Length: 396
Image 1 (tube, rainbow, N blue to C red):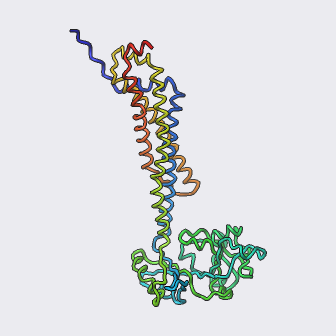
Image 2: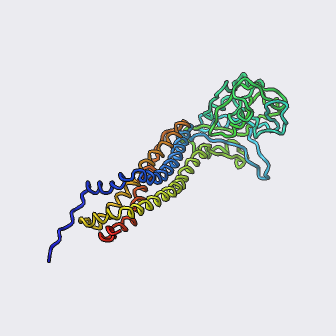
Image 3: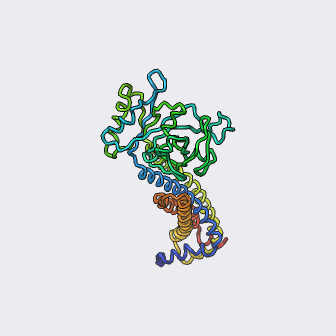
């Protein structure tokens, strides 16, 4: 009995040469095949990256604005009628241990703000007119982008500060113009920047507390904004209803505006799973494309397979060669896709002026998914190539 020589072991260097030979021979096909994977990974990393920088911006806003502000508003009575906050509410809140500041606004129900007196009084554009304390913006952590906020002098005259949304809807970009409120012309002395913790202020025209009385304002605050130390937020929250309205504490509503930003950040995190799924669908389409290209490659390279088999290559080595080619194609697409996705998310962050945050989970998951997809896509073509006998392959 003749002992046949054992097949040579396939070294890693030889495997790389054999596996990458097909890619070098057909570079355009390789690029187009890897492009499908690159698009899928780029979609996954880019979508999750945009979500990541958006979430980072929300968290940065929360850190900047703090979670120690509470808002107090009047609820409804037991009979369902709207209630009001007592005139002494601000002073009482300021006496609560831990409170560092309190300010207020009061809604002027029958007043509307219009660009001119020729605009129909029913056209409100969703804007409200509110009496404001002079320290309101400092309590909210807001600023003005044009002009100045109300002070002890201007609050006694027909002067108004427009919220960011109000200025946009009225078409007024700078201080110095005039608006028509409750049958009187008001000088726009300031335009506030957007206040994330008080969306109602963005939609308001703010006038002085003292001058508002001339428009029928009763002096009762509609909403109080209170700041306390971080350690006393919970205790202040508990004490606010009974302090603001001792007779009817159940008619007082207390909330923490920063909770809405926190909830939005959590929603962004939940959305990541959906974005992963959308990117995964695109990645799957790319994997199908690679599987199709590899099947065609096996058919075109039957003689090469037959020659290698006749020279001693085992079925396992042929299988490994085509698997290497498939995984390499997919991995290259994955690398390109990760770079494109990161570039998209960083460009978005730079345009918006948001923090540059890397979606590490998406980067790692996208790269790993690309390799796994390449391995799965190459299993059938590699198996098909390995099952070819030398005579069958060379005879075709």
